Length: 272
Figure (spheres, helix red, strand yellow):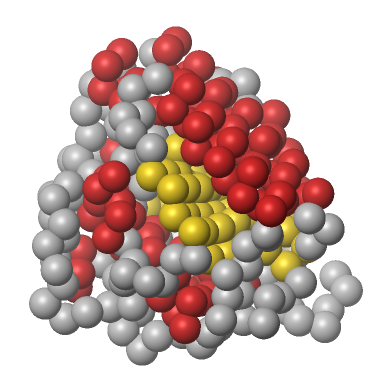
């Protein structure tokens, strides 16, 4: 049975927190003002896309899931992703992305709708993702929706992190998020949004434990989220998984190492 709310996760690949102050990002700025955020969350090592997203969705550090490169290897000790748990509890799930290596972030059959686009070498590739997600939302809303935008990372590699083209790519991602959220809001449901990245970057690379690589933004806004709050407690990328589960009203898998970021949430039944 479908719920009356939608939880949306946006992952902007390679988004450094300091880029949000330098780029034109009115949508993300509004989410920060209306919700709870930190610009000092931490990703995992190595700070590359597939290990980081595996931690993000499966709620464990790299030592537990064992993915240390951008090539997927089956987990020796399986860990359910939040998508798997959502699907098992009859939530409608969707994933729209433009980097095909992310296809193994959940078990086969856990997604009601999945659309993969490639390559993500230009701004239009992120728009293909956003438009496809918006069209599907208008047909049938999701309980949990994951939207991945990959062009920012490609632009960082091609032009350098914090370069003018990179900041333009961040602004482009902000417009894509606005387009998807407009479709979500037209569904009449309560919407909760989490915007974050998998890693940052420096020069034209990432993957190290430099602060520029491992520091990520984590921005939560919408239903059940405290307004106008800056988190002072540590947030790790694998806290995303259990926090999303809590917002979806799902049980936490015993394998997950992350914690629910309770400081960001309004207690159920509270009007504050």
